[in-house]
Amino acid sequence: MVHLRCQIPHGLHMTLCTIVAHILFIEIVYLGRAQETPPACYTLDTGNDGFGAQFHRAMAAYAYAVHHRSNYCFRGFPEMDALTSTNNSKQPEEQLRMHQRITGFQVGDCSGCRFIPQMYEEIEAGRARVYTHQVLKTLRLKYHAAAAREGILYPSYFRPGRTNVAVHYRLGWDAPSGTARTLDIPIVLRTIEWIKVRWPDANIHLFSMDVRRGFEALVRAGAQLHINEDLSLSFHAFVAADVLVLSPSDFSYAAGILQEGHVLYFPMWFNPLPHWNWNVVYTSLNMMNDCRICDLYKVPNSSAFRHTHHYIELERGLCNGTTAARICAPSGCRCCAGTQCAPFTKHAPPQP
Image (tube, rainbow, N blue to C red; front, side, top):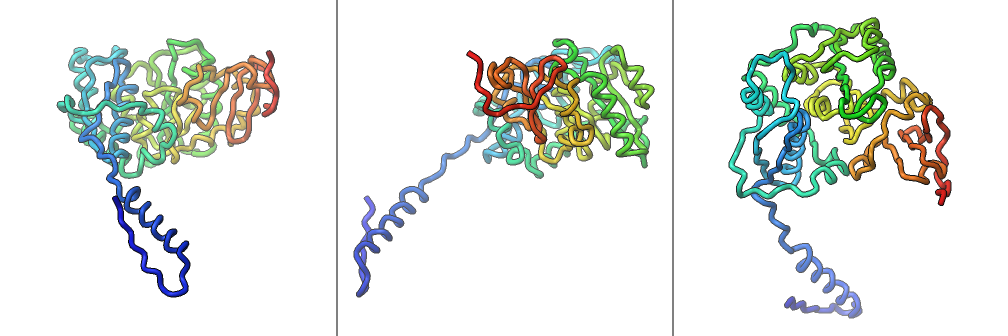
C-alpha cells in the first residue's frame, strides 16, 4: 500500500494534488517494478542441414542472446547434410569437426540454458537492432581467428590492389530453375556486367557445386569458375572478397554477415542487413521493369518472408484479383504470370 500525503500551499486546488499523487503512484508501482531477469544463457539446435544454414543459425542465436542481455551456448554440429565437396581429403567426421571449429564458437554444456523461441521472427522484424556493430565485429573476430588456426588463408587467386569479386551461384537441386532457390543465369550475367562498369578493375570469381548450361556466357563475361571446391575455402573467399554477390542461400548469406565489403543481395527468405547494397541491383539494372524476373521468386508465404524489402505474395486476390505472383521492391510492385507483367493495383477486389 502506497501512502501519499499532500500538503497544499495556499491557492493550489485539490485537483492538482490529486494529479501529482497519481503520477507518483505510477512511478513507484510501474516504473519501479523489477524487469524480468534474462536467463543465464540461450541455446539452439542448429539442425542437420548444410554448413551455411547451421552457421547462420548459430550467429543469429548469438545475436539474439546478446540482444536479450544474455550469453549464447553453442551446442555444436551433431551432423551435417551436404558436408563438403568431393575435393576434400578429410574423413567426414574430421570435416564436421573442422566446420564446427571455424565458426569460432566453443562447444559448451548447454543443459541449463533456455532454448530460443521464435528467434527468426524477432530477428526479421529488426535486424538492425539485433545485428549491431559490436555483434558483427565480435562474430568476424571469432571467425577470422578460427580460420587462421585452421590454416585457411587469403585466396591465392585474389589480386591485392584489385576489386576481388565472389559470385555464389546456387544450383538449387531441390527446386527447378526459375524459383526462389536459384538465380537464372541472365540475371547473374547482368549483375556481372554491372559490376564491371562499377569496378573496372574487377577480378571476378564464380563459385558453384556443378556446371550448369549457360556458364560459358559467364566465362565470356570474365568470370573465373570454381566448381565443387572445398566448401570451407569457398566460404572464406566469400568473406574475404571486396564484393560478394549472394545467391538465395544460407551459405553465402552467412558469409555476407561476416563481410566488411560490398554485399549485393537478391530477394530471398531472409532480410538483408541494413548496410548491404540490397537495392543496387534493382536500381541500376532496372530489373523491376524486366518481365523475365517475374517467375524467379515463387516461394511459399512465411512470416519471415513477409518482412523482406522485396517479397512475393502468391495468395489469390492480391494481384489484381488473380493468382499471379506479386513481386515488390521499393520502386513499386508488379503482377507477374509467366512473362506477362502488369502494374499492381493496390485495392483490386479478390475474385470469389
